[in-house]
Length: 162
Ligand code: COA
Image (cartoon, rainbow, N blue to C red):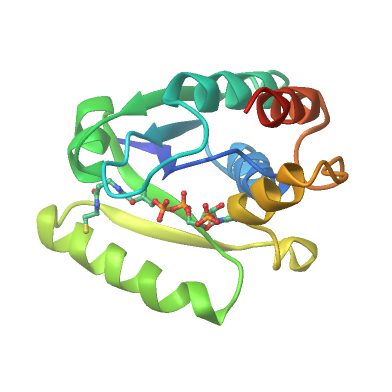
């Protein structure tokens, strides 16, 4: 396992500036950040897996040590597959804590060698989530301060197409 290589998994439906904050800060700390989009069978997504990956690729183009993946199945298995022993997650508020702690303990149970590190999200993104972006975009309102600049049009277009 490479100790300087971390995994940041999520649904990213779509990626937001809150996620970007976590990715950019992780990219400064670790040698390699692997952002992985999960094909979540429990959660119905608005954007296809390919669209979510494509938007992250565009948003992270300026970050040379960030790699983008997609995976199906357990996060612990994917972490092992790409040789990561650390998972990164962001904490926006106390309300995130309970579910994140439960997930991290479950992952630890599945693989004792895997650690989860939490970064406290920048306060200005505490309210932000992918569903907030989807809701605002569905009304045709301005999302330019919520998501990376170069994917704003992609999101708008996909809502117009619907
Ligand atoms: N900034 C902005 N939004 C954030 C955020 C941040 N820093 N951190 C989380 N969020 C939001 C997301 O936008 C998302 O919002 P939404 O619900 O409105 O769409 C919500 O918080 C949670 O999304 P995400 O971080 O993508 O987590 P998730 O719960 O969808 O998925 C996985 C988390 C992928 C890590 C988890 O489901 C997983 O590991 N799945 C694979 C199967 C597995 O291994 N399960 C665990 C075994 S117990």
